[in-house]
Length: 272
Image 1 (cartoon, rainbow, N blue to C red):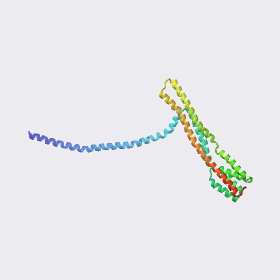
Image 2 (image 1 turned 60 degrees about the horizontal axis):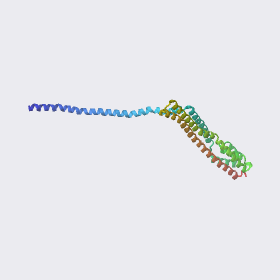
Image 3 (image 1 turned 90 degrees about the vertical axis):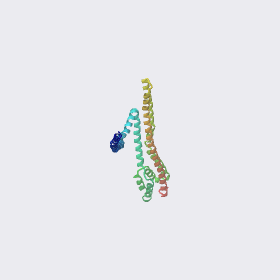
Image 4 (image 1 turned 90 degrees about the horizontal axis):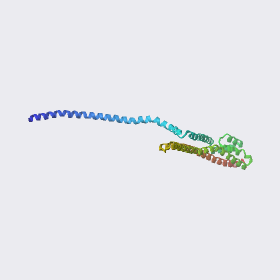
């Protein structure tokens, strides 16, 4: 009996040993399959965001213009069109002024030295020709001063001062309209807001119920016109200040050049 039991135990041990060995051999394969699956999933996750980003790039580019179009329509085109018109007209005048002012700018110091050199070596008429062929208000002031050298230094000074005032007025031409549009754009926006609020209350009265969604929609649409007007005013104000700064710079150069002209005429004994 003991031999039978011992034989059964030995047989069971021999049978269990191959099964355990095969299980150990199969475990790495399972782990390799698991690792390969995890690597594949990680690679897919790394590739997925890039694909998503590439797919979302074009919609983001279109989102800005589409957003502006939607807000323009939501803000009531009747008032938003007026606000947009003030922006277009204001920018047109401002850009024209900026181009004119920058084209009128010259190297003042170089110009004064050239005029003085020509005045001493070639005379008044040659200096006047140089001023006539040079662009900008400073050259025009020099021409007016040289044109009156025969009338005495006092008349030269009066001519330079008077003509300088005229040229400053020409530089400021059109700024009154830019200033008007800066004030008008927010007013149009506020008017659209007030009318939009009235329409919102009319909707509440017609529905007979103060619904949060109804009130929120009406207020949002009303405030869009105010935002549009304020944005237009801010943009035009920046251009307006830029133009004023440039005009102040040119005016200071004109005053310095006028003093240099008078000193030049007295120093070289062109006029008494």
